[in-house]
Image 1: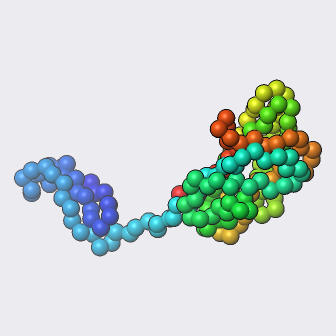
Image 2: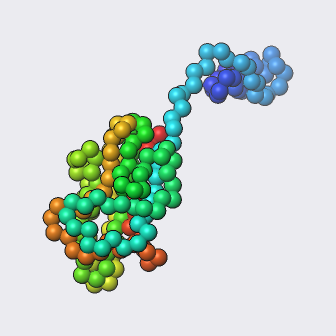
Image 3: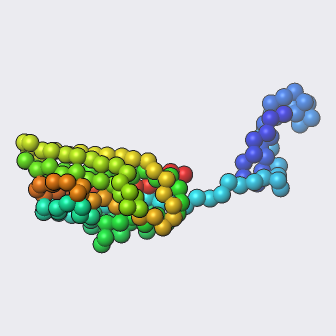
Length: 174
């Protein structure tokens, strides 16, 4: 006889001849199982925010603030500072994109507790261009994660509008 534990019951698959003989038919039975253990529930954590307007010449090592919050499950992202404070420990995915116009160049770093974890560089020689980056890192509860321009030379506005948004998002893998 095969058994599969689901919730507080065992689903008994009566697929063998003994069960067929005893019960007289093939069907699934729900029998209470007091020894069932449940996996711990994990809370969802996810955010998505974008810049509501162009960011003029942010300069070197400037924290990028994504002021329009679309999703903030777990309330970890702070739109006034641009910083994500992890509400719980886990493995997180962070993704960002940056749009620039003609002749502009910038580097955006993802910083976790003052350590650079990823960098996206973009140079837009002609027209508008966008760069995206995604990383996966372990983050402890209370750690901060944010984007900033790199300390080296940067030039021009970071664009964000109906033609394309500069965005920052993250979510915890469960």
